[in-house]
Length: 304
Image (cartoon, rainbow, N blue to C red; front, side):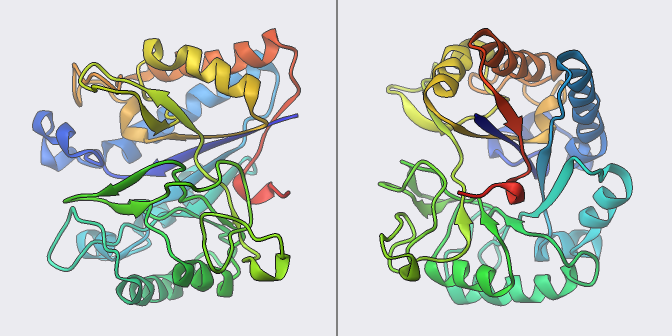
């Protein structure tokens, strides 16, 4: 059985800084306003075409930055619940926590992060007390943060990016030598699982699936997460191979990528609905061609 997790990060239209040069700042949440309904429309058509239920997990921005911009940290949570929530849709928490006086550099100070998470969590539970899945913006994670999530009864973290490490003017994370399949993280080293279950967190880590991709501007192949916004010509064979070799597939997509006109000639990301549909077709065609049983699950449904 192939377990497929289709996940979406509800970031603004400039989650990648290179996009902003072609966009009007006043429209920076078009991915939420226009892109999300487009995606649901496509998913509904695929459900009918392939006669299957496609469950998905949507990681919603709920953080201090949203509070500063909209006057309510839960602004998008409330909007998403009102418009898009169904039995097939899981809502997860996706905070972006930046360093003080910065809107681009992700924080890596545990105390600062946990203080802000605690502040925001108390607002979330007033609206939705049963959010069980979490993905940290910027993919930073630590023992202390996992412990906080476990204490708040979260069941799933999906921040892991196996094989990658970045320390630059935006990111600060290290997932080198981390497990590339779902696992219960060790309290001593969150990249691995201890043989002694008492030494592990009870919260399950579900890593993003990674494939080796080389854009035209790359000198070598990089481990990148399996993102349905990547040019179909770059990843179609990679998707087929990954599905044939792995039982768990965790996919990511940012809703702004369904929109035309953000960045016309990006060499890695292909904006617009056609590319998203083509990559989704590759997944279904691979499953059907190889007569594989499959199930699209919400993250919090999964267990090992």
